[in-house]
Length: 271
Ligand SMILES: [Zn+2]
Image 1 (tube, rainbow, N blue to C red):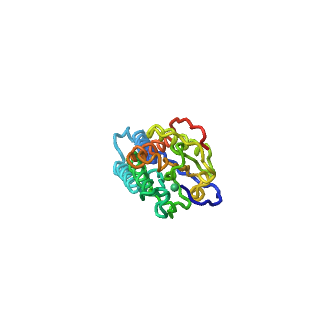
Image 2 (image 1 turned 90 degrees about the vertical axis):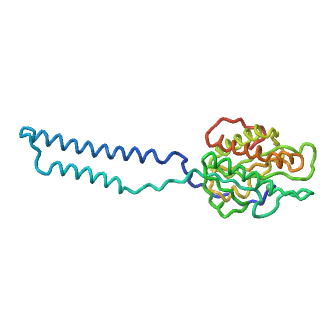
Image 3 (image 1 turned 180 degrees about the vertical axis):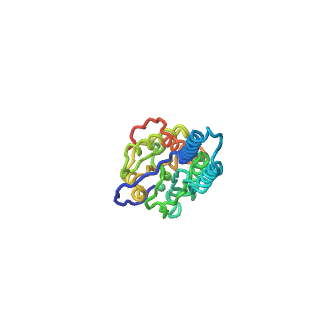
């Protein structure tokens, strides 16, 4: 279940998740190589000049040693690069910190189901090497939030609607500055979620409400974002509560599929 909407804003920048240290290392190697070459050139010149006498001028070896030491000192004193943080993924536990979301007659709430799943997704993606923010529905961090991916986790109503009220839905942001990326995230999430849970994709009722989900309008529009309704608390309750690790695995695999550019087909009815 979802919250109210806000108008979209303009685009911003996106960080690159590429390895940051390789370039620094190769520059240091290059710098040291240059110094060695420079010293070699001086040596060659000096040997050319003085070899007939079989002598090095007084102080030359000291000068060379000093140059090498200076170089070593310079490279040691070079500012240590601040390690860039690992790529960030945001996981919103739907309704967390705000309200209960859908409520079942026996007191089970959507928010507790969402938080359980979201916490497991965070653990899985952290193990996969990412910094994962577990976020509340209206988390302060969401304003201008900059990440590789943001996924908001919700579940559908606990009311019995009809026998078709089973399955999951995924929608991306209409405000995304890169709709093809958002579309790929939807494809990855849907594909991997279906594989992990066996739930069917529920194409009906992907409303403007989902695509205009308030969080999509708060975050940096270069953050690729999607919302998933993991299932219906009524007919899919067993999966959502007893097999929540499977549910989380599907979402985590969907996020990794997107980040690593894996192929995934888009189910019919996604937007
Ligand atoms: Zn909800």
